[in-house]
Length: 79
Image (cartoon, rainbow, N blue to C red):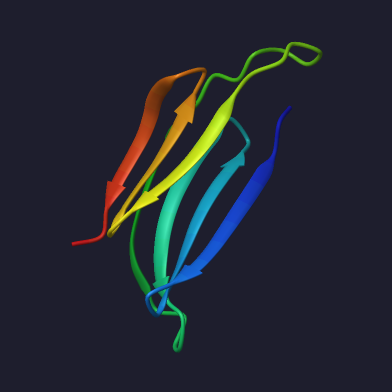
């Protein structure tokens, strides 16, 4: 099973993309306090072990998204 996490510190926020236990979670926290500002979690189907896939982690303005093989599979807007 694929598990990964990417953290991006930008604009006084910590943006986190996490894939774990068959789910993807996109979340945002205040860098200074750690307060959770919001998140979205949904199931994800990752190709089986041994099969390559392209994952893209996007951050544009206050929007986060996760793309799998050229298709957006998760989206979160902070404001």
